[in-house]
Image 1 (tube, rainbow, N blue to C red):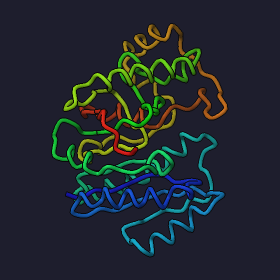
Image 2 (cartoon, rainbow, N blue to C red):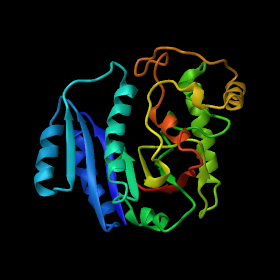
Image 3 (spheres, rainbow, N blue to C red):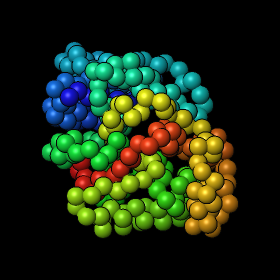
Amino acid sequence: MKCCFCGPVKNCGTYLNKVLENIEKLGSLFNDYQIIIYYDESKDDTLQKLKDYQTKNPKLLFYVNKKPISKFRTHNLAIARNWCLNYVRQNKDYFPFFIMMDFDDVNCKEVNQKILEKYLKREDWDALSFNTNPKYYDIWALSIYPYCFSYNHFQNNVQNYNIIQAYVSHLLKNLPQDQLLPCISAFNGFAIYRTNKFLNTYYDGRIRLDLIPKENLVAHMKVAKSKLVYKKYVTVDGRYEDCEHRAFHIMAKGAKIRVCKEVLFG
């Protein structure tokens, strides 16, 4: 049982030592593991920390990208994650599992590897992400009926964020301890995947309405009391961007996308 830990890094120097330490702990659950990182040019010591760590742990491989390919953040994130994903696919017979994760403060807390170990033995998921303290935070990547699209593409996006966060938090709180929460898309900073279920999908930070059934869009518009809007915000341009994880999960036809109520990092 082998696993590939993947993700993009940019200006993550503050967190890298602890995140890589956590990866080592989780990596001990597998017969072997590798770390594949796509590095985007940073203003801190991220690159030097990667180089220093690689001398200690040759399981780390990283690609250095010196220039953003797109002016849109989610498009660049999709490029980075797809680069990692292509490596996994090329080695699919070696890695039955891969983990896509962020290398920031979310995964910089103490990790409880016994939680992941417990779910590795179960067959009721193909993609599994975990809850976070004090709340489930990654509402942008989340699609769970009737909230099937991005909260940024409806009026009153902050209010919609809070409503969806309360909704998923309520569902997780009331979920029986041994059950997992089904959804359409979820990431929350860390997710583990069965590689063979994600061979025909890819990350896409563009707006992919073609992937979302019309009835799901109608359901979200109804509950949000809003038509779709395409607006530029401070951190994301909603005219051209959506979370890259949504398309990735939706394109994995038939995959069991699940959220665990337990907190892996915290």
